[in-house]
Length: 346
Image (tube, rainbow, N blue to C red; front, top):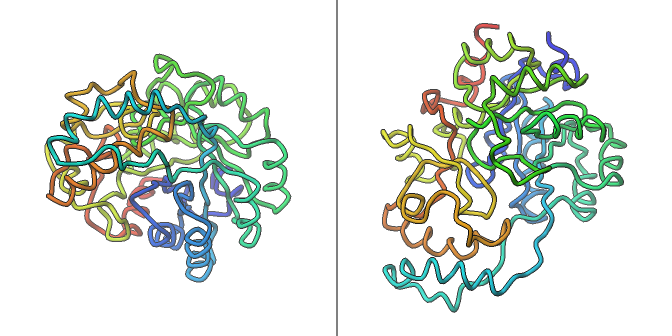
């Protein structure tokens, strides 16, 4: 048994990555009941929905689970930049008959706050994880006072050291291969981002808390390799995207099963922060990283109407098709099977 299994009280050193927008409590319940650590992404949930989903988890499993939150700074409204972004998108609005003047500049992604903690205290999740750094020291101590263990993502050794200094119980070493949003938070320089199997041993060398490998791991051999390099466990998301317990959209599922799944890129087009997606039309035409996108998460408001309009037509040209570089583990089987298979060689 690894130190991570002892720390979190889990049977298998497999953590299901929280994947906002493509899952709810069903996936977390299935993974936890299979012996891994199921995760609920809470960053895009309002208070009522978050409470409902957490209640569903506690009603359907007695095993540990993880509640995940974003820690970004809420951006200052920037009407000029938001107008520039809409101007960049204007040819697409015209193509699909969308009126840009009625698109609100809002986002559903909220950072962890005292209000969030007020809701969370009713459940006191065994594990709470954070992306984009950590909330204030006051909030971290409040979560720890419940007895919750804290996980957080690092994409560099400096970030890992910073997280350890601020009291996290374990660090998720997110390699460049990982799908979805980068956890980068000490810098905006994407040249600092390296692959999982280069990052992992460096972080293991410099920190004294358990390290969880994330990015590009899709099967039992990959899990075993990560453990061999010093990981106490692995976090896996992409492999679960075709399971019946996820809410992955039809166009996203189709993309994952197509040849295009092998072509991904780090892009800021869909939210304003770098995230790995399967390449589609808008990424090809505007470039993966566009200087005109507003700060996270404001960019998503302007592109959402295009996504909704085209997805209704079975078109994935404007959709965030989150996926890691290795989609070979994606299978249309129950999440419990994926979880057990990932740990088969341990």
